[in-house]
Image (cartoon, helix red, strand yellow):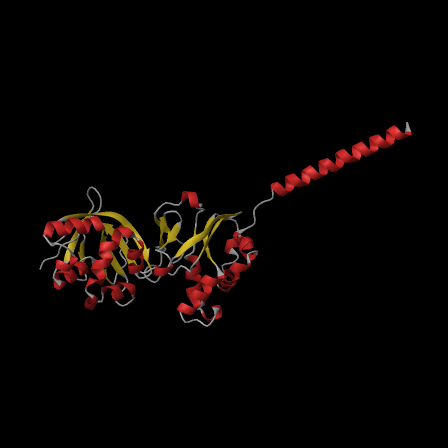
Length: 325
């Protein structure tokens, strides 16, 4: 009888041990994911990012509740950024500039890699061109994800995707993503390759430098697509960009630019006359969608709006505007 009691006690103890172990396993498997900040702090290759977030007073934001997407540059990316911009170290970066650069890596919604499609999204950063419209980011989805055209264009490429956090998701990237200029955004989007070629065709015009800088900014650019340029060449009979006289090409390009204004689509009105960098105007129409009637009474449709850049804004059009010559 005594032996039976001992065995019974041992059996009950075993059951209790197994039960406690199972409960502990359940607790471990149901642990709440760490915040974006906690995950980044645990990664030694993100120590520069942590230091930057703390310097810019943004660490608490990424440690709070919410739903963010963070494109997180590694230490090598930060070192390259500091070197390229002439900063001796992170402390040499002005806090205000650092804050906007960091916010340019953050989306206000959680976007996993499987949900990314090629196109524009909004970051939390603000450039000098607008106090309200936040900077646009161009994501290109191929076998991976390129941001703003990759490192060669001031952007980055995702190296590790979908690190889950309690307040969003982290994608590791190989570059610090700068605030994109109009030229950066034009280069990033393959629908603008002909426009980029046209802007740089006559180096004496200095268009690339103008639309990359801040003099006469902000700019509003009505950007024709590759298809629009192909139709333009057919319509005008030019065999290619090289066949267009330099003065004609320069005036045409200037006719697509408004200097000194960041004109958002919400500011466009029916019948509005828009004065351009070419010292000629065109007219806005809102019937049946936003349209532009140029000085030759040709009509172009605005097919995408409000691509916000650091020095201006881009609206995409489906026909090249033709000024008077």
